[in-house]
Length: 279
Image (cartoon, rainbow, N blue to C red):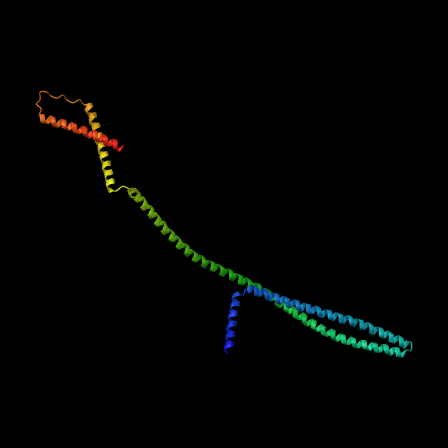
């Protein structure tokens, strides 16, 4: 096999492969069925044409037969009138017509044979067409069932791949949700710890410590005020015993007592100031 022949063979093979992939068997079967039906119609038209020609020849034959009968009567009449010459001419015409009739009969017989052959072929072709139609419908049903099965299988395969994609998407969504939940929890924790207040405030550490000390001192002052109020209430409810003027009192103890009283008053006043300042 030469190079050109091999190249042509390869090209034809590739073209046939492409055509096979693009071919729809159901369309091919329908096309073949239609072609066979067209052939059947051609055969029927051929039979009709032959029948028409045969009928024409039969009509000619009948006319010639009528002429033969006419010439017989003419020859008999001429003989009766002693016109042998006319009788001979009539018989000659009769003979010619008889020869034509024989020729027509031969043609009619041939046409009849052709017609019978075409009818037989038509019947055989029609039977084959019916058989092919049954096979065609069966093959189409099988092909459509196989195509549907293949479509379902492809759909299931595609669905499986899509399910894998969906599974991966769900995993990513769960990871992102967990990250978002962790971030929200961290933000809540920072907010509760006051870290955001420190970040948003323009105060330095010394200011914050002074505020804490002020808050603590305010609490202590309020506590002292409460203690003082409670002590005053007890003092009013229980009268203090009168001092014994006759008892010997040390001057230094009196000074210390006065100093304690002054210190408590100072503390109380300081507490009130701190309380006012804090409020």
